[in-house]
Amino acid sequence: MRYPTPEWLTEAWGKTLLALLDLAQLPFSTDLEPLFTAPDLIHYLQVEHTRLFINALPATPAPPYASAIQQGLFMHTAAEEALSFYRQCGFEPCDPAEPPDALTTELEFLGLICHDPTKEQQFLRRHFRPWFTLFHAKVLDEARLPFYPAVVSLIDFLTQEVQP
Image 1 (tube, rainbow, N blue to C red):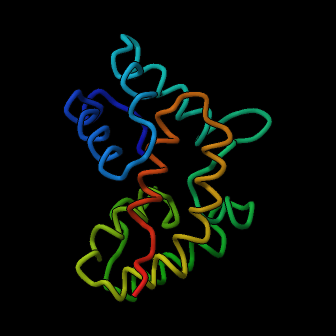
Image 2: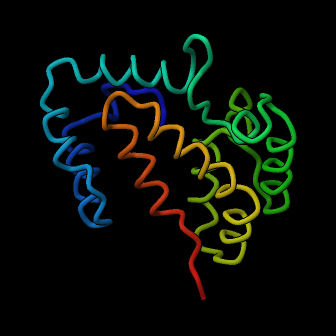
């Protein structure tokens, strides 16, 4: 979900994404395969990323921040709650320029606490899932390319709460 760059958007990355979508039985593979062969793929994804998540008129369709999605404000209550949860778990966000409720920050945090199912489920239930569900729907509605709907659908699949 970071801004697309040639350093990480490689052929191997694309094949891994397609394999994960197939394993999760998400119906995006056939839409994505032609996209991955486009000569200007990086350009198209950068334009789409900017439009969806950073800057579009009259408003950014799907800002990847809990505060913006839930409260319509940047760096509001949801950001404070995320930072508080991180600190309760003994973590401090690595990038002080990135808001604590940014999707990328929250996904990195989930990766760090995945060894503790209790904390992971608490964070998913109390913080991540309520706003991500809304964000996911916005991306599905607003995207012009299949790439971001596929990625957020995979994130949705991977962050579903485990039912006991």
